[in-house]
Image (tube, rainbow, N blue to C red; front, side):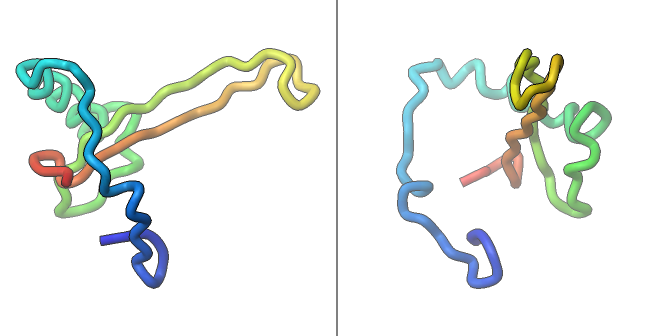
Length: 85
């Protein structure tokens, strides 16, 4: 697991962070994120044979870069959805 051809692993991405959110809310959140990948705005992120969960977003940034209206898209995902260690 890692990023790039050499599968570089930056140690800072292996540090566990606690959210302070009760674990009982995670399952329903992950179920919604699964639907984003299966049939929602994140279908383009699908990888055959990999259970993925994700969330897409769009932010409006007026006046950025000299443009009247600038929209910035974002995506965050995790895989496998059942155990995204």
